[in-house]
Length: 157
Image (cartoon, rainbow, N blue to C red; front, side, top):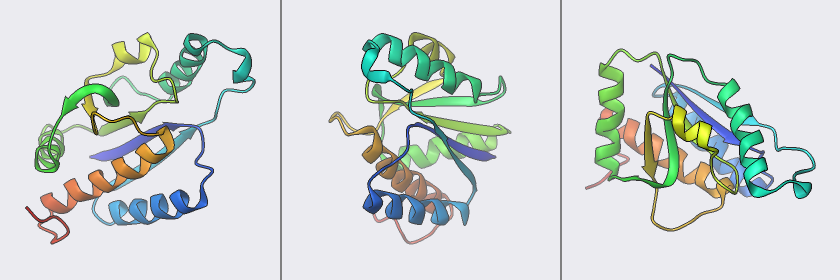
């Protein structure tokens, strides 16, 4: 199974970029992984929040295949533990799924069409984080989940 992460906009903080790069390498040692960056919407200061979400949503949906299992990282998603997340990953692997796609939206979240396309939603926390920081937090949890499945000593209960 391939794991893909779709994100809106680039990360401009070099410290975050380095940490993200480190976790991407770690993840690739355990699973096929790809991170796809959807470019920021141009002239977004002239757009309403809803219109910006719609434009970002259209760009995200163009990157998805009908066979993809799509998981939104959303504040209203299900709260799960790291072990539960590892179990979720294992379940998807066992199902014969070709591509598992996680999606991080822009600063205003997702459009209605993206919500309709989603198969599942996961919350990383009840707190709100910047969409750039969420990338790092999610990648760490993805690595942790894969490490648990591979009996790697990274995770401690």
